[in-house]
Image (cartoon, rainbow over all chains, first blue to last red; front, side):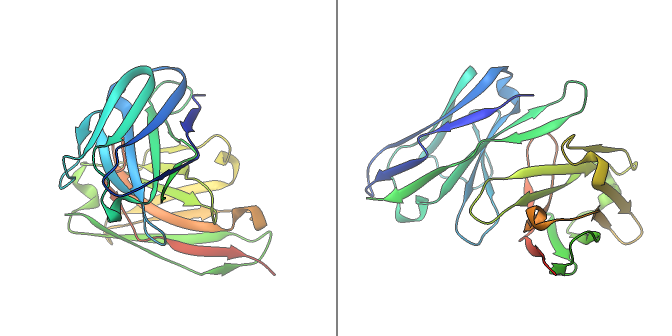
Length: 112
Length: 117
């Protein structure tokens, strides 16, 4: 079973700054199956990035994803007030014994 | 644009069965375009995938919950459902229905289910 570990747990930054969030997999995974989500308090998560680096529909270009193998990164180039939220990475494993969707534990991006 | 809406009791007694339904609009559950999943999130914690169903009725479950989970689909109503048996306080969470293939493209708003006597 693949485990995703996100770091840091909490990231304190100011609007306008650059945010770099990390997601590390316990074993090498296909980047095709790596996604990122944003969740605001009291709301459902929202898909930001899929295939490690493709932005979902309507996602601003200040959000970008990169990485391969075991190390993946979500970068927000210039933080807007609405970007302060919790971010989750997610992997889809299609291998036996069963397909699985695995989420990281999340990174909370808070206003400094 | 697919929209998803969860419905069901917000309070379930310990040892009983949690039952939720997800109504799909803006698309047909029979189209074969997506898998239909249930995902939960305890308060202040992360996301846990429970299981999924395809339009054919084929299911996959999280091994950690498999013995207690049943997901079914009713194509005539454009709905799919979750049953989780023998619940305990540890099953208290916001339950989301969702859709997608290797990622989750669409989410319901979520419904809080509390397990308490």
